[in-house]
Image 1 (tube, rainbow over the protein chains, first blue to last red):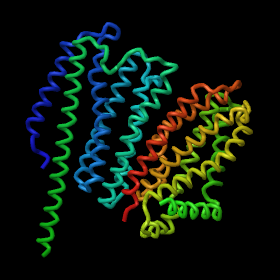
Image 2 (cartoon, rainbow over the protein chains, first blue to last red; image 1 turned 180 degrees about the horizontal axis):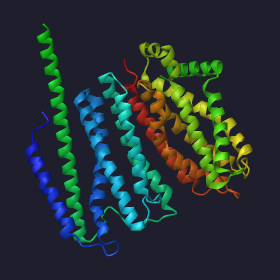
Image 3 (cartoon, helix red, strand yellow; image 1 turned 90 degrees about the horizontal axis):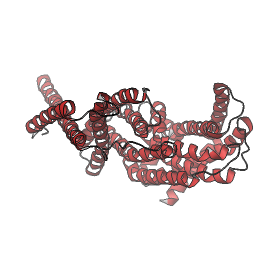
Image 4 (cartoon, chains in turn brown, purple; image 1 turned 120 degrees about the horizontal axis):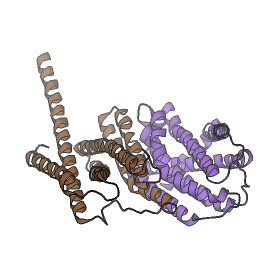
Length: 230
Length: 224
C-alpha cells in the first residue's frame, strides 16, 4: 500500500545525494572567509529546513487524521515527526560544529535560528513520552494528532518570538537562506536541499512500509493462533 | 455554551474556595522559588533583566503547578465521566478550565508581585505598575489557553505529572520572551517603557493563535 513508486524514488534519492556530495566537494568554491568548514552549511541548512518542513507536514497530516478519522494519517504524521526529530539531532550537532569552527564556541545564544530550533526540538521530544504513555490505540492517535497540530502552529510563532528578542541588539549580517549566495554556491545548496528532501521522503515511505508490514504480520499471526487453538 | 462554561467555572471556583488547593499551593510555591533564587543568585536585591527573569520564570513554574492540578479532581474522583456524559460542548469545558486557570493566576499574582517587590526587587513596583498590568493580563491569557490544552492532553496519559511540565515549558518560551523583555526596562533603576508595544503585540498574537487553536482541537480531546 505504501510501496508504490518506492523504487524510482529511492533511485532518484541515490542520484541526488551522490550529485550533491560531488557538488559540495568538487564544484562549490571555498568560502573566502571561513574556508573548508563552510561546506557543512550544505548539510546543516537543508537538514534544518527539511526537519522543520517535516514537523509542519506532520501537523497537516494530523489535521487530516482528525478530519477524516482515518488512522493511517496518524501513522504518517508520527513517522514524519519521528524522522524530523532524528534530523533535528543532526541539525544541532552540525550547527554546533559550525559554530565552534567559525565563532569559536560550541553554542551561541545570539544565533536566533539555532536557539529557536533547540526550543522546537525540545518540544517535539515530548511527542514520544506523550504518545507512548497512552495505551488505547484510538485515543493515542487522537491525542498525538492534537499535539502535532499545536506544535506545528508553535514552530513559526516561536521563530518570530526568538527573532524579535534578538534583532535589536544583534543585527543579522549573514542571510542563511541563500539570498545573497554566489551562483555556484546557490546551485550546490539547492541540489543539497533537494537531496535531503528526497532522502526524507524515501525514509518516510520505507518506515511506513515496514510499519504496515509489521501490523499485517501481527494480524495474520493472531488469526493463525486463533485457528490453531480452535 | 457560555452558560455551560459559566456553570463549570462556578463549580471549579467553589471547589477551589472550599478545598483551597491550587491557589495557596501556587502562591506558596512562588514564595519558595523567590527564596531559592535569593540563595541561588546570592543577591539580596534585583533589578533590570535579572529581576524580570526571576519574576517570570517563577510565575511560569507556578503555572505548571496549577496546570498539573487543573483536571486532577475530575480524574481522581471520576467527575470527568459525569462531565463527559453530560450533553455539553467540549469547547465550554475548555473555556471554563481556561478561565479558572486565568483567575487562579491573577489571584496568585496579587500576592506574588507584592511579595517579589518586598523580598527581592530593588526599584519600586508602584511606578511601573500601569505598564506591567497589560503584560501580566496578556501573559495570563496565553498561559491559561496553553495550560488548559496541555492539561487536557496530559490528563489521559499514564504520568500526567511528568508530561505537563515537559510539554508546557517549551510551549511557553515565547510568552517568557515577550513578558520578560517587556518587563525588563520597567524594573530598571530608572524605569522606562522600551518597545512595550511590540512585546504586547507578540503576546496578543500568541494568545490569539493558541486560543483559536485550542478551541478548534479541544473537541478531539476528552472524547468517550
